[in-house]
Every structure is written in C-alpha cells, then in structure tokens.
Image 1 (cartoon, one colour):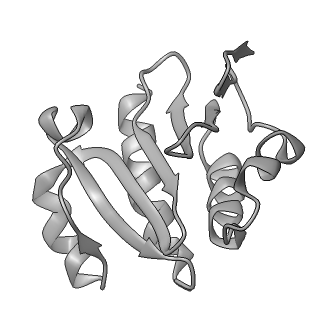
Image 2 (tube, rainbow, N blue to C red; image 1 turned 90 degrees about the horizontal axis):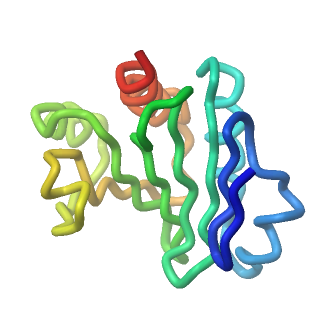
Length: 140
C-alpha cells in the first residue's frame, strides 16, 4: 500500500471504507459504494486508490496497468473520467448521461472526461459496463 498525505493507493483490492468515508462526510456515497462493490466483483486484479484532497476521487487500474478510471465524488453527483475513446460519448449521451469535456491530463490524452452521473442514478449496469471496458482493456 502506498500512502501519501492525501493519497492512499493499493496494489490490489479496495481501500477500506473506514479510511475514506470520513473524508466524504456530507456527501452522498451510496452510488459510489455500489460501483466500487460491482467493480471489485467483476474486474479481476482491480486496484483502487483514494485521494482525500480538494478533488476527492477514487482511481482504478487493473494489475500493473496505469489508472484508467477516475470517479470524483461531488455534491451534485459523480464526475467520471474514463480511458475509452471519445467515439463512445454518443452512446453515453444516448443512455441519458451528460458529458462536459474537461481540459485535464486525461482529456488531452483522448479519454472521455466530464461524464456526469447524478447520485440518484438507478441503472448501475449502464455505468459499470463502461468502467469495466476501460479496466479490462487497459489491464491486458
């Protein structure tokens, strides 16, 4: 486990709830908890990191690959950056999601960035299929 002032990073598995929950006091966390559980169950070799800094986020990779998913927990919902081609933005929008591209490192690298998911989103399968796609492809 790698730990810095704001970042806790595991080589395999999920960061313990007691470690990150205190940093998200006042935030809705039920959706992100469901996503984390589903990814852990469905993505072999999943490794999670949590950043408790100003932009609170979970990062994911598979095996020794680079991170390929970032889920930022915000007051109004989740903001997701995912390492899949922007061609798929159309499919995400068709599924009812909004995307506001970000000009961050991931956006400059061609990722889908700024994918917004409200906390009350019910179709978790629609979210996790895209996250799995990124994690499985990047962990080969």
